[in-house]
Length: 81
Image (cartoon, rainbow, N blue to C red; front, side, top):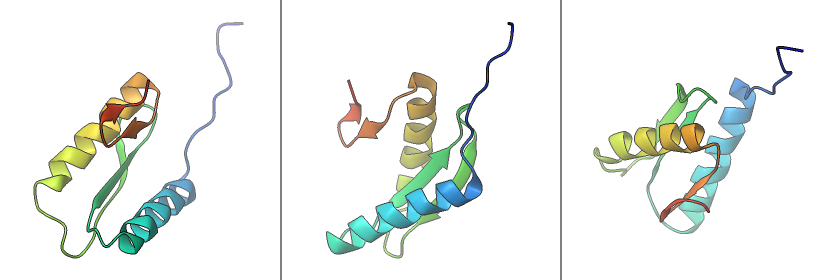
């Protein structure tokens, strides 16, 4: 067979991820920017919390694309090993 079945992140799934991340940030009293990318590294959702710094937009989108290209989640220290 020359094609494989694959799973795809839905918008609802991306929203759930953003909601979870922002809820955890609120508990820790942080303002963050969350970027969710699909498997191809294309941005699905981007949310900057009130008080989030402007430079976090670039950082979070770059980190999301990097995580997609490496096919692994990232942490505060970079790609998880």
